[in-house]
Every structure is written in C-alpha cells, then in structure tokens.
Amino acid sequence: MDLKLLSTLNGLRRERRAAVVVTRLADGAARLVTEGDDLAGDPLRAEIAAAFRSGRSGVVAGPDGEVFLAAEVPPPRIVAVGAVHISQAMVPIVRAIGWDLVVVDPRTAFASPERFPGVQLHADWPETVLPGLALDPYTALAAVTHDPKIDDFALVHAVERGCFYVGALGSRKTNARRRERLVGSGLTEADFEAIRAPIGLDIGAASPAEIAVAVVAEIIETFRRRTIGTPS
Image: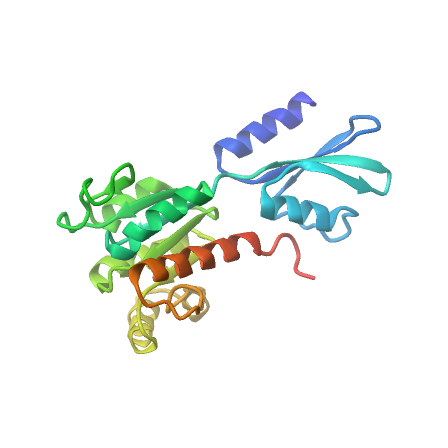
C-alpha cells in the first residue's frame, strides 16, 4: 500500500472515521474512500456503500476487473443513559452482537457494579461523563430513565455530536413535553425530529427484556441501513 495512503488511513482510524480502501487486483492501484464522500458517479458506488454498512471486506467485480474492498469501520457502540432493568437486559444482547455498551446514571443505587458486572459503568451525571466519552457518528445513545433532569442533556449532546441513533423512552404525550423543553433550549425542530421516541421497534414489547430487544434491534437497523454518500 502507498505510504501516503497508509498514513491517511491510520489518521482516520485514530479519529474513529470509516474508510474503504479500493484496490484493483490486476495492478494493485489503490484509492481511499471516506464515509461521507460523494459517491455519485463512482462505478462501485453500491459495493462501497455496502462495505461501509456491513463493515465487511471482500472482492467485487468492477468495470476494469476484480477489486478488493477493505472496509475500515470503527466498532459501533451503545451508550445507555439510565441503569434500569432495560439497560440490564441490553447487556447480554449487546455482548452477543459484539458491540460495546456504556451505562451512565448518577443514581448510585441503580448504577452499581453488582447490577452491571463487566460493563463500563459511570455513576455520575451525563453532563460530567458524556463529553469525555467522545460520542461520534458510530455511537448510539438510548435515554431510558424517564427523568428529564438526567435524559435531556444526554439527548441534546448526542444530537450535537452526530450520533447515528438517539432515542428516548416515553409516551407521545411525554415526548410532546420533551419537545417544548428541548426546542426551547436550542435544538431545532429538525434536530428534535431525529430523536426516536417512543424508543424501539414497534413489536408490542411489554417487559424490560422485550423492550431491550426492540431498542437494540432499532439501533442495529439504523446503523446497517444508514445512508452512505449522496441519496439516490
């Protein structure tokens, strides 16, 4: 690989930015595509977009012969604000899919190592914790406390950091009150509309475990079906 291309790729890795190295197998000619680049007109647009979404590398057929697509996608992670039963039920699910889970809750009666063994746990306010976690477009944030004093900052911060998924528990009535608070405090209507509420896929979930399944499923769907490049 060309040293300049390798240096650029390593820089993207350090910044948790996704890239695909496109290498023509016939002669080794390589180019770098970063997520967010305009793919309109790229003959491998669909294949590159698929590599970004799946994070998988492989050989595809190009107009000039076979091409190897090396996907370098930062590992996605989920930040759960609220150390409640739903978050506990999310732990084995998130582990099973191979993602990281971070739990944040200032209520030490809930945020205890005994309730979340082996989980990155922060028993402190989101205002204190989240800036240090460097949320980014490969982070999902799920606010599940039902308490505006804990959830509101986290939701605004996650939107401002460009998280690929931001969601919160609550009925439509609760969400209407949330809109009044957050839009009044600086979020635009468009920003607020990006927040998923009520959280989770509509599968009729009732128990905390079922809600956890619905939430994680919605997060996976959002990540794997995100728009890459210019929408067609």
